[in-house]
Image (cartoon, rainbow, N blue to C red; front, top):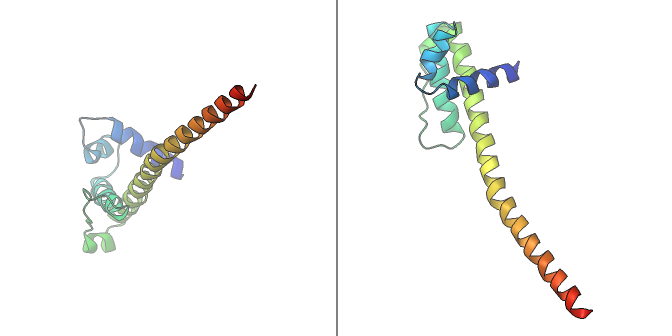
Amino acid sequence: MRRYWVAVLIIVLLTGCQSTHEQLINQGYPPAYADGFEDGCSSGRQAAGVMAGDFRKDVPRYLHNPQYETGWDDGLRQCQAMQENQDLQDYRAHHWDERDEQWQQEKDRDAARAYRRK
């Protein structure tokens, strides 16, 4: 089920011109769900440490409207997970590329030493 929501979110993010809210409504989601998803997504990005995200939650609506609640929860989880995954990929790309470069340099030096001894 989680994969389904991640796929939906990726499709939503790749649509470009339409906002997430508009895309969800065009896909048949109720407006309350779309509102909750949008608020939860912003909150999820903020929870993952992105300064651009704002914590947004209409608490009375969350407590009394199950569609808003579900949308908010889905948006929070998905956007937080996507941001954390992106941060991890960025970290690995930076640090692992650096390690690979260091390993290649060490390998080349060792090969050069081995060839000089012959």
